[in-house]
Length: 133
View 1 (spheres, helix red, strand yellow):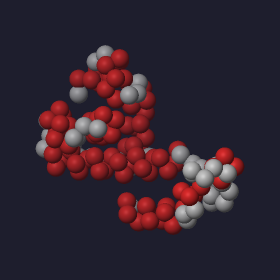
View 2 (cartoon, rainbow, N blue to C red):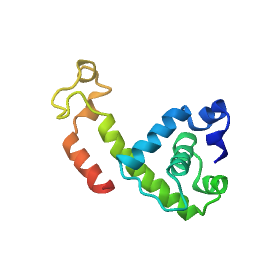
View 3 (cartoon, rainbow, N blue to C red):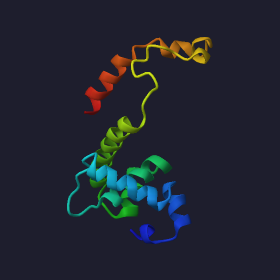
View 4 (cartoon, rainbow, N blue to C red):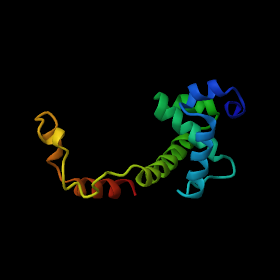
C-alpha cells in the first residue's frame, strides 16, 4: 500500500488518524484480538479496507477496485476485522455503571430521551453477543 509509506497528511485524510495510531491498532488487532489473516493479506491492508468502508462509506465494489481484490475477499476480511474491532471496543469503551442501575438526571428528567432507556440493557447486550459471536 503506497499510502503507508506516503505523505502523512494524505494518510490522515484517507484514514482519519495518524500513521502511529493506525499501526498501534494493527498491532493490537493481530496480537490481542486474534485478527488472523492469510499469507496474501496483511493486517494493515485489512484495516485500511475496513476504515475505507466505515469512515468514507465506500461500497464493497469500490474498495475491491481500490485494493485490487475480489468483492468476496473484501467482504470476508471486512467481517473478520469488524468482529476484532468489536472485541477491542468491549475492552476500551466501558460504561460508568456496567449494570445500568442508575440513569443520569439529565436523561431521566427529559421526556425526549427517557423512553429509550426503558429497555432492559442486559437483554440487549446478550442478544447482541449471540448475534455477532
